[in-house]
Length: 501
Image 1 (cartoon, helix red, strand yellow):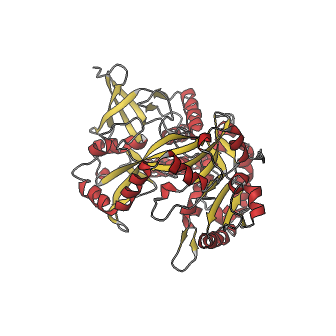
Image 2 (cartoon, helix red, strand yellow):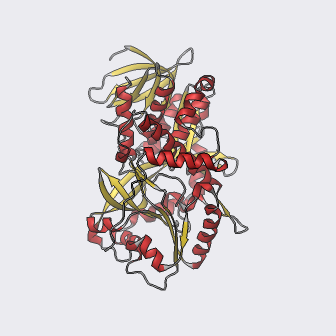
Image 3 (spheres, helix red, strand yellow):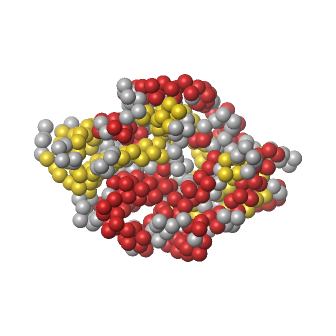
């Protein structure tokens, strides 16, 4: 065993999109700081950030119906959609800055232009979609959104979905051209390559087994080499726990009071992947439907064009599954070992409250391939079983905590940042829209944990993100400029036309 003491400024735990983003921002703001990364697996972006483990939607709330809610008076609340769109604009600005500064190359390797559509069936849902369209299309963030319930127009937009469909069926869609498909696995690797070139030490196959606060406020980490079992101790002034599903256990080990009474509920995902390239060529969009009544927000069905390793693919899902693991590569004991005396009642309350979710997950796990094909046929009526395979996507750990609105044991469906009072440690928990809003989330972390330095860093932050501190919705001219410049920097003006058979 090695007791060699390794002191550094910042330690990032987990080599996913969040650590990659935080490391990249910090290297721009404080180039002299020493940063180390520890990743249990053999390479970067292998869990939730991996391109096969998420939908690759640049979440900008252009098509996700669960970000817009119908209120009791019948009006549609789009405030969450506005917030998420503004956050995605921040990501695009930062990526553009990296490309323009030649810190990273070839944006097409991780982002492509792709129309985003919302699709509904039935008169009641069409009425909702019309109201949503009215509310959104007047907002500068959603400029260019179109609505149609004309079958001929829909055939032009989504030929594969309209083929073999009953002409009498009530169906409508909204479409916006400004959507994107993002390969977060490729982006994560690109950012880590950049960090390595800047002298950041990245240690793969190194597991952080424990961490504790030392006298003076710094943190000591017990790090184990996965290959040979050798243990080293590393210390840092600031630690970021960005280990996806693995974050909750490490947060609990830190012992910080802010990490108490928080639990996690794991949900796994499955996608159907089209293995017939002729069919994949006919669909060119991300098309989001409406979740079935009683289904959780993460189960919204969508049919996605994806670009993975330069190849165009077609995915449908997600189907939910259940595994007690918190990571795809985790342990079957993860859920059990996350239950502590301080979160036991929170977890039990959630279990009692979420019986419908439990029932839904059991039903999903029991689905046969043919039953999954039936759900796919609601999108593609003529879909054939032999053209589609099932792939297991990433594990998501939904946060469970006590809230004022939801009471004890409330299941959270977003991304949660937990920081200690003196800003020396932060952990990221939760799921979607996660990766798409990584830049915004990491800037919030920096504001919270480095308030003193932030005053000095602000001009650099504004150079990287021109809209920093401003609402783009309230500055339409700036929004236009940013749309134009980010589209140019990220090569988003190169549109592709789908093949119509």
